Structure formats: structure tokens, C-alpha cells
Image 1 (spheres, one colour):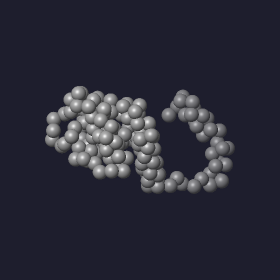
Image 2 (tube, rainbow, N blue to C red; image 1 turned 135 degrees about the vertical axis):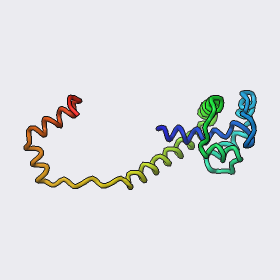
Image 3 (cartoon, rainbow, N blue to C red; image 1 turned 90 degrees about the vertical axis):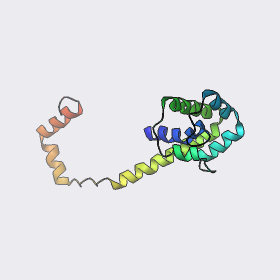
Length: 144
């Protein structure tokens, strides 16, 4: 879930200013950007990978440290997109979920395989009362 929020934050965060190196966008500038439908459509196409990104969009995708003001702007932007662009928001969320699934599959593929349990080892474990008691205590949180 954290990855999803991070990805969604970066996809919408490029609305914060118009060029790299420019001071932080003011609240008034953010409101003007959010109110401009053509600008929003351009930024959403960038976030969805359906159009070009400006330098700010590319810079913010490299994961810089966000200031408290930038974090607030990102939250406001995400809330605005959720309310006013539900189809685009759904596409952003589905894209993020697909990315998370791909990462999870890649991690699972790299995980070492669990050793096979033979029938003999399983029978021995099930016949060992002390082993069963230890496992039950562990499951109940009564023992490590």
C-alpha cells in the first residue's frame, strides 16, 4: 500500500510548479493550475504515461525530498483528482496496482524455494507431542 501511495504522489506531484529550479508554487498558483482543465488534462496524460512530461514531472519522479508545503500540495492535488477526474484517478490507481503486482511477482520469483517436506518428516512431527505443544503455544503467543 505504501508503494501505491508513493507512486500516486509522484504521478500527481508535478503540478507543483512550472519549471525545475523555480521556487515552490504558492497556494494561489496551485488553485489556478487545478482550475485550468487543459493544464490538468496535460498533467494527467503525463501521469498516465499517455503524453509527454514537463521537466518538473520528470524531476519529481526521481524521488526528491518533499518539503511540508510540497507534501500539502500533493495531498490537495490527489484529493482534487479523485473528486474531479474519477476516470483518470481509476486509471492511475489501476496502473499503480499493476506496478505493485509486477514488483511483488519479481520479488516472489527471487525468493528462495522452500524445502520439500517428506511424508516421513511430517509423520515424525505429528507424532511428537512436545513439538505440537510448542507449535500451539507459539501460535497462541504464549511462547517464542
